[in-house]
Image 1 (cartoon, rainbow over the protein chains, first blue to last red):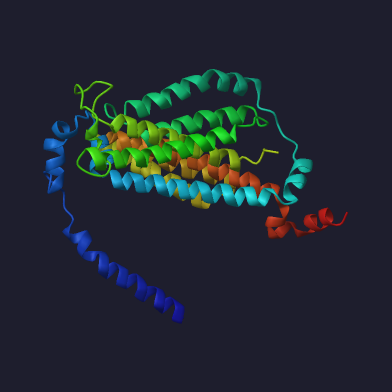
Image 2: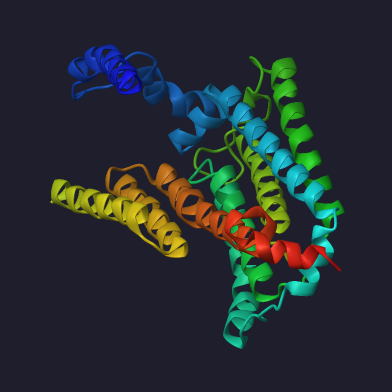
Length: 236
Length: 95
């Protein structure tokens, strides 16, 4: 009884706290505050055709670095926990019990056919992040899904962990290095304008934004591939 | 037209969410939860946010579902981690 009263009081407090938010919210008919500046000046300042990318990578670049850091921490946690468990006797137990079904012919052929296309598509997404919708995170996930398909079709396949870790470590360090270069040569940390802006709408344009998105794409792709690989539970 | 589509997709999302809660089979529940994200990405696309739609479709519906399925298989494979199979564990432990 007492517990229920406390729950009701807590819910009422939360409702009271959020009530002003619910009443004051209304449909906006125009841009407000700094969004106006981004929309009006964004293309001229940074030279990226996709405005979302110039906000994500440059104006709010520190947030993106934070997101990359969150993903890195999550990957480290998952890999550490799952690998620590595997080193006990569980691995042997798992090995004896598992009667594995091989991937069917259809899946194997389909995966072999789709893998290069998916890798190419992922690279396309993050290389064109400053021109078309998409970017490092989306492209990285597409890359990881290509490897996922490959792991589905052949469960015994071993990925090169050293290469994965090196790619991930290099791209993470290079991302911060590019940010510091911006601080040194241009306006501030993660300012992409230390490289020439190029012609608007071309592949090599918008300063260092494509470079940053390529690094983010490689990092996200290798991290998510690592997570999938440590979770699939078929490694020996 | 747009409003009608968004309402329809919203209803599908609601149905998917409720189905994920009430399904007996865990794998079906995981797939239902993944379908909620897939329909959400369609709504983002309709509302003119293709960047968010791509992220939602790739991470929310594809990768999260796969991670859930993998962990579900792993839980199934380790009998000692579930309480109702303790007898099996003891048999394994004796020799």
